[in-house]
Image (cartoon, rainbow, N blue to C red; front, top):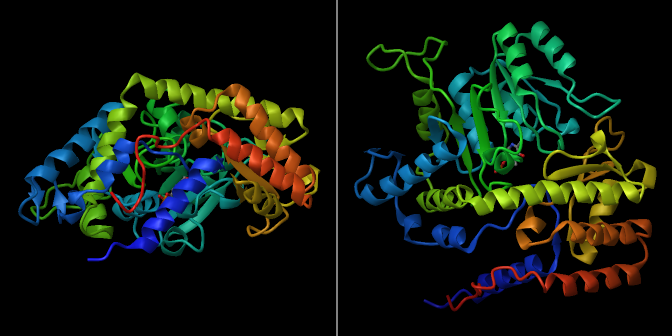
Length: 431
Ligand SMILES: *Cc1c(COP(=O)(O)O)cnc(C)c1O
C-alpha cells in the first residue's frame, strides 16, 4: 500500500509547531517517548471487552497482564484499593461514574463552569446537565476562593445526591474534609475530579482527596503527563447504599457498579494500547524524577505569578497553589479572545477563559488561563518564567504591533531550540 504522505507530513508539521512554540495551555503536557511508543503498536488490534480475567474475547492473556499492571501501579501511586483504567477520556470517566451512582433526574452540585468548573459537572450543553438536575456553587467575589458557605447552604437546601469538587480553571487547593462534612450532613456522595492537579496530588504536593471523597476521577494527560485518557478511583470500596442488587440478589459493591458503568454502561472495547501507555506513565510517576518535576511545576507557577504581578496583571485569587494561573485582563482593556488570537501569532498558546463574575460571553471572556506543566516538561526553570511573561506582556501591551509580534515570535523560536522535544525520536513517514 502507498504511504500516506499527507497525514505523516501533518504529523511532522504538528511536531514542528510543538517544538518551536511556548505551550502554556494548562491542560496540556508533553508525554514521554516511551508513553508514545506504548500507544502506537499492535495492542490497538486487540478486542478485550470486559476486565482482566473476565473478558468476552479470546487471546486476552497478554493485555490482561498489561491492564493489571496499569491498575496495580495506579493503586500504588494513590494508595487506593480500586481503579478502573478503561475510560477513554476524563469526560468518559465522569459519565461512567455518574451512571454508576445516580438515576436520571437526580440532583448534582458542582462548581459553576463560569467560575472554573468543567462541562461534565452539570453544564446544560453536556450530558451531566441534560440527564441530571444540576445546581452550582461558586467562588467568593472578594478573594476568588471557593465559597464553602454557599456550597453548604445549597447542599442543605437542595439535598443533592452528589457534590462534585475539582475544576478546570482554579489555581488554589481544596478543603476536601470540609466538603465531606457538608456531604455527610445532606446525605450526598462526593466526587473529586482531580483531572488538572492529579500529578501534584500523586506526589503529595497538594491535599489528597482520597481520605474524604467517595470517588475520584481524573484525566491521565494533564499533570499526570500520560496518554490522553481517564481513570476512576476509590480509596475504599463499599456496599452501595442505593439498594442495587446483583444477579443472585446480593448487594452490589461500588466497584462492581463502576466497572459495569464503564463497560457495558458507556463504552465498548477498551483501548488496550492506551492502557499500556497509562501503565508506562504510572511507572514514570512512581519514580523520584517525577517528584522533582512536580516541585518544579509549582515553583515555576509561583515565579510566573510573581512576574505577572510585577507587570500589573491581576490574578483570580491573587496567585496559585498549583500549575496554573487565571489572569483577569479587565484592567488591561483586552478580552481573552483578543489575547489568545494575538499571542498565537507569536507561537504562544494559551486559552481564553471566563473569570468569576465575567461580564463577557464564553466566546469572548475577560481572562486567560495559563499553565506551566508543559513548559516545565520541556525543561524551563524559574528564571525562564520571567522571559515568558515578558514576551506575553510585550504582545498584550500593543496587540496591533505586527512587527513586535514577529520579533517576539522569532525570539521564542530561537529560544525553544535549546529545549529539544523528543530528540531521540524523529516522527516521520519512514517509521
Ligand atoms: C480536562 C477535564 C476533563 C475532561 O477531560 P477530557 O479527557 O477532555 O474528556 C474533565 N474534568 C476536568 C475537571 C477537566 O479539567
